[in-house]
Length: 95
Image (cartoon, helix red, strand yellow):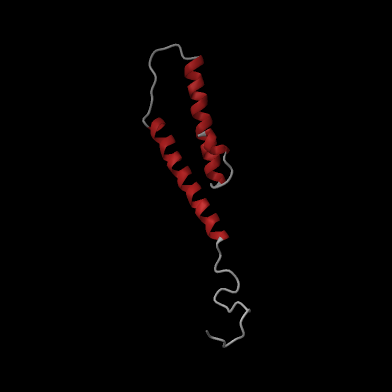
């Protein structure tokens, strides 16, 4: 989630912030369990597994939409002079 938050293009700033907040929260909690937790009972909600999947799906959908918009912006229409006579033959000349 922190990696998705570091990508600047293709997603809204608010989603980047939420990715960073949730990613940092999960990383801090994981480090707490690794370093300070002595054993015993802890609670692990299923949201811990579902949230990164949902955020990952949204991330890749946003990236695909951004690339589609970018590609559509580069193709704006037909080139200038499309369907016009080339200029090497006089007007009205047919073979």
